[in-house]
Length: 247
Image (cartoon, rainbow, N blue to C red; front, top):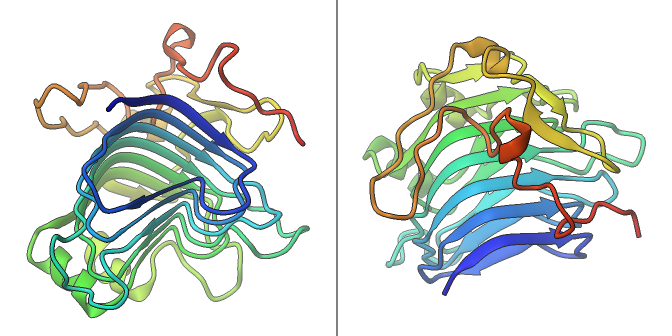
Protein backbone atom coordinates (compact mmCIF):
# COMPACT_ATOMS: atom_id res chain seq x y z
CA UNK A 1 0.00 0.00 0.00
CA UNK A 2 1.33 3.43 -0.98
CA UNK A 3 -0.21 6.58 0.52
CA UNK A 4 1.48 9.49 -1.23
CA UNK A 5 0.39 12.94 -2.44
CA UNK A 6 -2.89 13.13 -0.54
CA UNK A 7 -4.78 16.26 0.50
CA UNK A 8 -7.58 16.25 3.09
CA UNK A 9 -9.46 19.54 3.08
CA UNK A 10 -12.34 21.03 5.11
CA UNK A 11 -13.09 17.77 6.88
CA UNK A 12 -15.53 18.00 9.82
CA UNK A 13 -13.47 15.66 12.00
CA UNK A 14 -9.78 14.70 12.04
CA UNK A 15 -7.98 15.12 8.74
CA UNK A 16 -6.18 11.76 9.11
CA UNK A 17 -6.33 9.34 12.02
CA UNK A 18 -4.49 6.05 12.39
CA UNK A 19 -6.01 3.33 14.55
CA UNK A 20 -2.97 1.10 14.86
CA UNK A 21 -1.20 -0.52 11.94
CA UNK A 22 2.03 0.16 10.09
CA UNK A 23 0.93 2.27 7.12
CA UNK A 24 3.43 4.85 5.82
CA UNK A 25 2.52 8.27 4.38
CA UNK A 26 4.45 10.79 2.32
CA UNK A 27 3.61 14.21 0.82
CA UNK A 28 0.45 14.72 2.89
CA UNK A 29 -1.39 18.07 2.90
CA UNK A 30 -3.99 18.57 5.67
CA UNK A 31 -5.90 21.85 5.47
CA UNK A 32 -8.77 23.47 7.40
CA UNK A 33 -10.05 20.38 9.18
CA UNK A 34 -12.46 20.79 12.08
CA UNK A 35 -10.74 18.62 14.68
CA UNK A 36 -7.18 17.31 14.93
CA UNK A 37 -5.07 17.32 11.80
CA UNK A 38 -2.84 14.25 12.25
CA UNK A 39 -4.13 11.86 14.91
CA UNK A 40 -2.93 8.42 15.96
CA UNK A 41 -3.84 5.85 18.57
CA UNK A 42 -3.97 2.09 19.31
CA UNK A 43 -0.41 1.23 18.31
CA UNK A 44 0.38 3.00 15.02
CA UNK A 45 4.04 2.31 14.14
CA UNK A 46 4.18 3.67 10.60
CA UNK A 47 6.46 6.25 9.02
CA UNK A 48 5.69 9.73 7.68
CA UNK A 49 7.70 12.28 5.73
CA UNK A 50 6.70 15.62 4.23
CA UNK A 51 3.53 16.46 6.15
CA UNK A 52 1.97 19.93 5.95
CA UNK A 53 -0.80 21.01 8.30
CA UNK A 54 -2.62 24.31 8.02
CA UNK A 55 -5.52 24.97 10.36
CA UNK A 56 -8.36 27.43 10.02
CA UNK A 57 -9.80 28.87 13.21
CA UNK A 58 -13.46 27.88 12.83
CA UNK A 59 -13.20 24.59 14.76
CA UNK A 60 -9.65 23.27 14.63
CA UNK A 61 -8.08 21.35 17.50
CA UNK A 62 -4.51 20.00 17.74
CA UNK A 63 -1.97 19.76 14.93
CA UNK A 64 -0.78 16.33 16.13
CA UNK A 65 -2.91 14.43 18.64
CA UNK A 66 -0.74 11.48 19.57
CA UNK A 67 -2.02 8.62 21.74
CA UNK A 68 -1.14 5.08 22.60
CA UNK A 69 -4.30 3.85 24.30
CA UNK A 70 -6.67 5.96 26.36
CA UNK A 71 -7.92 3.03 28.46
CA UNK A 72 -4.50 1.50 29.12
CA UNK A 73 -1.62 3.86 28.41
CA UNK A 74 0.90 1.00 28.40
CA UNK A 75 -1.03 -1.44 26.23
CA UNK A 76 1.10 -3.13 23.57
CA UNK A 77 1.85 -2.79 20.72
CA UNK A 78 2.62 0.79 21.66
CA UNK A 79 2.14 3.64 19.21
CA UNK A 80 5.60 4.53 17.95
CA UNK A 81 5.63 6.29 14.55
CA UNK A 82 8.68 7.86 12.93
CA UNK A 83 8.01 11.31 11.45
CA UNK A 84 10.47 13.53 9.60
CA UNK A 85 9.89 16.89 7.91
CA UNK A 86 6.58 18.26 9.12
CA UNK A 87 5.29 21.83 8.86
CA UNK A 88 2.48 22.30 11.39
CA UNK A 89 0.63 25.62 11.08
CA UNK A 90 -2.10 26.66 13.47
CA UNK A 91 -4.59 29.52 13.32
CA UNK A 92 -3.28 32.29 15.60
CA UNK A 93 -6.20 34.72 15.28
CA UNK A 94 -8.89 34.73 17.96
CA UNK A 95 -11.68 36.49 16.04
CA UNK A 96 -13.43 33.15 15.44
CA UNK A 97 -12.76 31.72 18.89
CA UNK A 98 -9.95 30.00 20.76
CA UNK A 99 -9.66 26.85 18.68
CA UNK A 100 -6.41 25.59 17.16
CA UNK A 101 -5.07 24.46 20.50
CA UNK A 102 -1.69 22.67 20.62
CA UNK A 103 0.81 22.14 17.85
CA UNK A 104 1.64 18.68 19.18
CA UNK A 105 -0.40 17.04 21.93
CA UNK A 106 1.70 14.01 22.89
CA UNK A 107 -0.10 11.86 25.43
CA UNK A 108 -1.51 8.55 26.72
CA UNK A 109 1.73 6.61 26.58
CA UNK A 110 2.72 7.06 22.97
CA UNK A 111 6.31 6.77 21.83
CA UNK A 112 7.50 8.46 18.64
CA UNK A 113 10.43 9.93 16.76
CA UNK A 114 9.59 13.42 15.47
CA UNK A 115 12.37 15.41 13.80
CA UNK A 116 12.91 18.20 11.27
CA UNK A 117 9.68 19.99 12.17
CA UNK A 118 8.22 23.48 12.29
CA UNK A 119 5.34 24.31 14.66
CA UNK A 120 3.80 27.77 14.64
CA UNK A 121 0.57 29.67 15.11
CA UNK A 122 -1.18 27.66 17.83
CA UNK A 123 -3.14 29.40 20.56
CA UNK A 124 -2.16 27.18 23.47
CA UNK A 125 1.07 25.15 23.71
CA UNK A 126 3.47 24.51 20.89
CA UNK A 127 4.17 21.06 22.36
CA UNK A 128 2.30 19.44 25.25
CA UNK A 129 3.44 16.14 26.82
CA UNK A 130 0.67 14.64 28.97
CA UNK A 131 0.31 11.56 31.22
CA UNK A 132 2.99 9.85 33.26
CA UNK A 133 3.15 6.95 30.79
CA UNK A 134 4.16 9.40 28.05
CA UNK A 135 6.77 10.99 30.26
CA UNK A 136 8.19 7.52 30.87
CA UNK A 137 8.59 7.03 27.12
CA UNK A 138 10.65 10.21 26.95
CA UNK A 139 12.69 9.37 30.01
CA UNK A 140 13.48 5.89 28.64
CA UNK A 141 14.48 7.25 25.23
CA UNK A 142 11.71 5.89 23.00
CA UNK A 143 9.96 9.25 22.64
CA UNK A 144 12.28 11.64 20.80
CA UNK A 145 11.50 15.16 19.58
CA UNK A 146 14.38 17.10 18.06
CA UNK A 147 15.63 19.33 15.23
CA UNK A 148 12.67 21.67 15.15
CA UNK A 149 11.36 25.20 15.62
CA UNK A 150 8.41 26.27 17.76
CA UNK A 151 7.38 29.85 17.05
CA UNK A 152 4.42 32.24 17.47
CA UNK A 153 2.37 30.12 19.88
CA UNK A 154 0.62 30.71 23.23
CA UNK A 155 -1.85 33.33 22.01
CA UNK A 156 -4.12 32.55 24.99
CA UNK A 157 -3.13 33.97 28.37
CA UNK A 158 -1.54 31.41 30.67
CA UNK A 159 -0.13 29.24 27.91
CA UNK A 160 3.50 28.93 26.83
CA UNK A 161 5.75 27.39 24.21
CA UNK A 162 5.71 24.11 26.16
CA UNK A 163 3.51 22.80 28.96
CA UNK A 164 5.35 22.09 32.22
CA UNK A 165 6.12 18.46 31.37
CA UNK A 166 7.41 19.30 27.90
CA UNK A 167 9.35 22.29 29.25
CA UNK A 168 11.34 20.17 31.69
CA UNK A 169 12.35 17.86 28.86
CA UNK A 170 12.49 19.82 25.62
CA UNK A 171 14.34 22.88 26.87
CA UNK A 172 17.36 20.62 27.32
CA UNK A 173 17.30 19.62 23.62
CA UNK A 174 19.67 22.06 21.87
CA UNK A 175 18.25 21.36 18.41
CA UNK A 176 14.78 22.66 19.36
CA UNK A 177 14.64 26.40 18.84
CA UNK A 178 11.96 28.66 20.29
CA UNK A 179 11.21 32.29 19.56
CA UNK A 180 13.02 31.98 16.23
CA UNK A 181 11.06 32.82 13.08
CA UNK A 182 11.31 29.77 10.81
CA UNK A 183 11.27 32.05 7.75
CA UNK A 184 8.28 30.66 5.86
CA UNK A 185 6.94 32.74 2.99
CA UNK A 186 3.19 32.99 3.67
CA UNK A 187 2.07 30.13 5.94
CA UNK A 188 -1.09 31.72 7.40
CA UNK A 189 -2.67 32.59 4.04
CA UNK A 190 -5.74 30.36 3.75
CA UNK A 191 -6.52 31.10 0.09
CA UNK A 192 -3.07 30.99 -1.53
CA UNK A 193 -0.64 29.71 1.09
CA UNK A 194 3.08 29.41 0.56
CA UNK A 195 4.74 27.05 3.02
CA UNK A 196 8.22 27.27 1.52
CA UNK A 197 11.03 28.93 3.46
CA UNK A 198 12.30 32.04 1.72
CA UNK A 199 15.74 30.43 1.70
CA UNK A 200 17.99 28.13 3.67
CA UNK A 201 19.77 31.16 5.11
CA UNK A 202 16.54 32.50 6.63
CA UNK A 203 15.18 29.13 7.77
CA UNK A 204 15.42 29.47 11.56
CA UNK A 205 18.27 31.87 11.04
CA UNK A 206 20.20 29.30 9.04
CA UNK A 207 21.41 27.78 12.31
CA UNK A 208 19.39 24.58 12.53
CA UNK A 209 20.70 21.56 10.65
CA UNK A 210 18.22 18.81 9.80
CA UNK A 211 18.56 15.37 11.31
CA UNK A 212 19.41 12.48 9.00
CA UNK A 213 16.54 9.98 8.85
CA UNK A 214 16.95 6.21 8.82
CA UNK A 215 18.40 4.76 5.62
CA UNK A 216 15.53 2.34 5.12
CA UNK A 217 14.35 2.99 1.56
CA UNK A 218 11.43 5.16 2.65
CA UNK A 219 12.94 8.34 4.04
CA UNK A 220 14.86 10.87 1.98
CA UNK A 221 17.78 12.91 3.32
CA UNK A 222 17.01 16.66 3.18
CA UNK A 223 18.95 19.89 3.59
CA UNK A 224 16.03 21.62 5.36
CA UNK A 225 13.64 21.31 8.27
CA UNK A 226 9.90 21.40 7.64
CA UNK A 227 8.07 19.79 4.76
CA UNK A 228 9.30 21.95 1.88
CA UNK A 229 12.54 23.01 0.31
CA UNK A 230 12.93 26.73 -0.50
CA UNK A 231 13.26 25.85 -4.19
CA UNK A 232 10.07 26.40 -6.22
CA UNK A 233 10.87 23.46 -8.47
CA UNK A 234 10.74 21.14 -5.44
CA UNK A 235 7.41 22.41 -4.08
CA UNK A 236 5.27 19.27 -4.13
CA UNK A 237 2.11 21.23 -3.18
CA UNK A 238 2.00 22.89 -6.59
CA UNK A 239 -0.16 21.70 -9.47
CA UNK A 240 -3.75 20.78 -10.14
CA UNK A 241 -3.86 18.03 -7.51
CA UNK A 242 -4.21 20.54 -4.61
CA UNK A 243 -7.13 22.84 -3.85
CA UNK A 244 -7.37 25.67 -1.33
CA UNK A 245 -10.73 27.12 -2.40
CA UNK A 246 -13.06 27.91 0.49
CA UNK A 247 -16.32 25.98 0.47
